[in-house]
Image 1 (cartoon, rainbow, N blue to C red):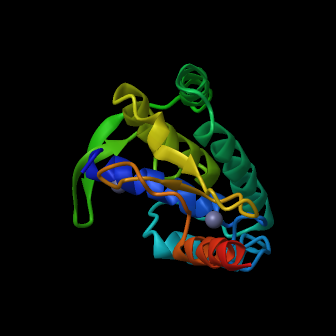
Image 2 (tube, rainbow, N blue to C red):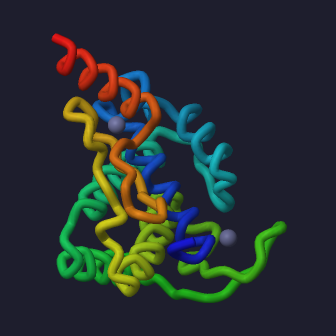
Length: 181
Ligand SMILES: [Zn+2]
Ligand SMILES: [Zn+2]
């Protein structure tokens, strides 16, 4: 394990959120096209707290998605500044909580704060760890030239190149064809 469990979960959620965007998603479409798709994503990730389920919330989450993808690709010093801005803007107040079957971990927003704010702050808290551990290099963009997917590389030797096995297989086929052409 490179980071703490909740940091790794937070980063994996950011990647999953970012990879719903067209250009990164499996379908090639925007997979946050309606509130039902957002609800499915949140259910999959067991995301707790307030959900409005309306178009406004969806639009705010899509904005957060764009912002977090940008943050993912920043250099470390720029990422630190961006994380500080985000935490200040949201008036984040970190505290230890224990709920459901999850042991002590950090929340920095109230559960009834708007979803997009909670997503941004939770991501920012994960970035705090990444920056302190000096591991921004683990926040990667997919090597497939036709994919804008992002992923967190938790492999031992930092060797992961693709956001998904789908991209890995597609690029392997392409490389094989190029070799045998
Ligand atoms: Zn929690
Ligand atoms: Zn990819």
